[in-house]
Image 1 (cartoon, rainbow, N blue to C red):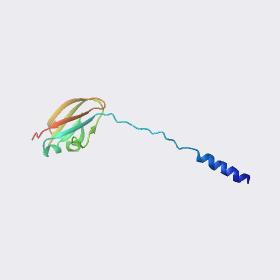
Image 2: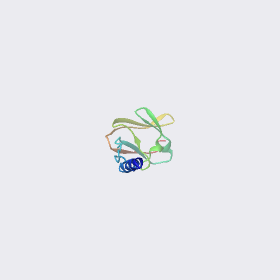
Image 3: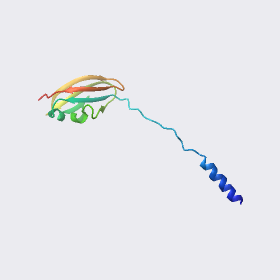
Image 4: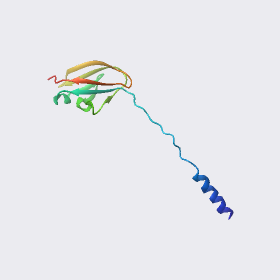
Length: 106
């Protein structure tokens, strides 16, 4: 009987324990860069930011996907067949997004 009462008390006490309800969110406030392209050919320009290749510019179209980079001043270059067809220096602040318009430079 004593064991049964002890077991009943333990079950009652554990039923009163609440799981933690703390929720943590991480906010990504890095600036974003996207491109508005005027032609299908422009999608296949190679994108380089500060000399680092990020693939084809078509991956980062406005309204679809942003390229997240650190805030500061950056040199944006687009290459076609190894030649620079577009170059611009931009400043991006924390939490801001920028859309660059790109034409067909062929």
